Length: 377
Image 1 (cartoon, helix red, strand yellow):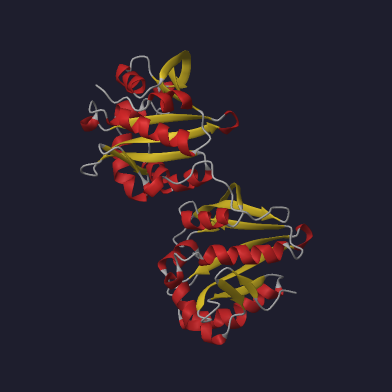
Image 2: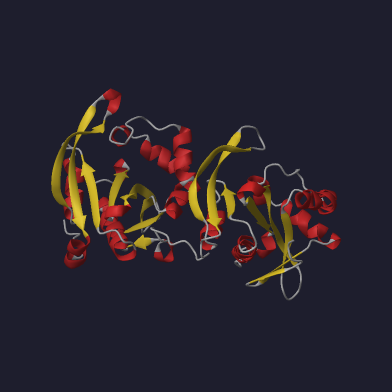
């Protein structure tokens, strides 16, 4: 039997009351709630909230789940709601879910509530809790990681969309044997949200960059040297932008926009791919809009990203490649401190089924940190 109340850091989980109906309606009728809870009626009215409190809560409890209001421990004001359902008793498994009203966001409410309920549930017989989230909901991913949930994979077409079709969901899980400590990230956030040397500025790629990235990735000399070497579709570009933060949080890659520090205008992109964590090796790749080539932006971006990677992650070795004919890109890497290491024949898929050779360069942490920036020329 679940306790009537569970205490957390700055939150109190208690039973819903009839007088919570207006706050529940306001929270569920919020645009974010409709985006990530597509089965909600729209608009979500007080009458819907009253029905949820009188019938929905009892239905979840009848199936072995739990439901709590998230309340301010001092004022008892409603901040959101949390619970778990989809209980599989034979496996000791359930799915945790929560919502936080727009008036209470940005205060760590969700993390505190997820930690509190997870600690209680996994200490009282449950063996596994899953937390599912959309690709474009990085705030929920951050809550999961901060609450000791590890990303396990993708559940394809798991949730119906309000307008038709189905969404994939990312799966995070915490098991009873986990200590609940925040999950360490291989790629931390940038200090202050960006990197800059006063000439270029690197900031994370995001949903607002779709038009810019489409223009850049549509350049023939860009997509022909990409993997795969085909022009990207609109959906490819959209996914690249909307899922960039999820990949960063997962530690697999960090995608950044190279911008002119003086004007803020996007000039190119650069990515850090942590493709070999077992050997502490990462890889960088970059591309520039034609109007910004030859101005040293790519060199500066490569150095900024390398310095951050070596200082803030456990990456000890960075590699990068260039086509044998791309003398300009090879010069960028050399000026950034990389050294030519290998010539790999037919390494990369090219356009129309061809294969392309790759000249590989390497930069070691001790080399860059010892030499410092080399931005002459």
